[in-house]
Amino acid sequence: MRWDLSVLLCSVLVTLGGCGLGELVDEPDDSGVDADADIDSDADIDGDADTDGDADADGDADVDEASDGDGSDADSGSGEGDCASLGAWSSTEPFVDDGHVSHPLPSFASGGFYYVHTLQRGGSDDRRLYSARQSEDGSLGPWQLASDDHGGGPHGFAAIDVGGEPFHFRNGHIARYRMTADGTMDGDVELLEESADAAFGGNRYVWDSAVLAELPEGSRFVVHLGGFSFTGYEYHQDVFRSAVPLGSRFEDAGVDHPASRPGRAAVVVRPGSGGALLFTGENGSDRLWRSRLGEDGSLSPFEELGGLPEGTGNERGDWFAFGATLFVIRGSSVHGADVDEGDVLGPWSPMPSLPEDQVDVTWGDGHLEGNGWGIMGGFVYVTGPTRVFYAPLVAGRACAGS
Picture 1 (spheres, rainbow, N blue to C red):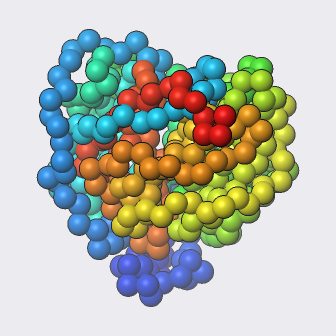
Picture 2 (cartoon, rainbow, N blue to C red; picture 1 turned 45 degrees about the vertical axis):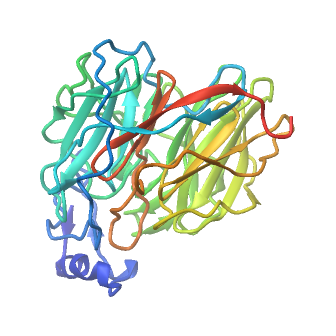
């Protein structure tokens, strides 16, 4: 990727509010996975954020036996569709020092390991991927270097586990991480697309969201919800989908995301419902929408629901689902809402809060961070500023109103 002088100046001014999207010029490179790697190292990644390396940690989890969880971060949760609760949060040891960050890059769970993308604070160097094995009690550790150059970023981008294989969709790519049994990366990612200009209808997305939906009758789809595209250098709301296993391109789902800046998303699946519910929001607001995903991959038009609950700090954080409960993180506040047998989303209820706000680092203009969570072995993991927080998911709770 080649950036001109206006981009270099804009990256310095972006946190001062002096640069709009229309002022930037970008010429995507179609040469491979590192197409947008050569971004000016002075670009403002963290703005005025002040990550506290002394985040609260319990440090008491030290079990060597690995979990037998499958490592999937799929949103389907319990097989019976019961509603769920969260137990108390614990914290890992730090995965980075104060000179490095994870957000706005993604994290994911796969194969019994939790993976965290990192890079230099305030720059774009030191693009390292770290991993930690899950223990029987849910703890992670110790952290190890999975790759000394993951090649992604510094933009936020979507990375998820799909049936035990992690993928990312940055800059027009359908990229499969090649992971070894010991939680390290075997060389570079494998690119599945024939062309980065064709995989998502010509869009080259960053600052985006993607989810895996595992439907009751066995069909599986990855849904990509749009985001910022280097094609046209603006936000595009086109929604794309692909059946699993993933191929060389996603197909247009026939609906557009309702937000000007597509935000977080999560899928709730209830057995016997004949499909799934896709919930999504708008980045930087409390708006909430829902679409119905059919066994054939069809998506209904999005319908707007009531807003998200109030949170703390910048109210940024991940969404995930387990069983028939949708969870949203808003700063350090965590809330859950149940989906009843009539597919109605119930009222929000407070869940145990995180020790600190999940996200304190954003790309200058407040664009969407990469997803920073995963579920495996009955625990949910979310990436904070310097540590990963984890909590047990308690299934089998009666849904509100049932």
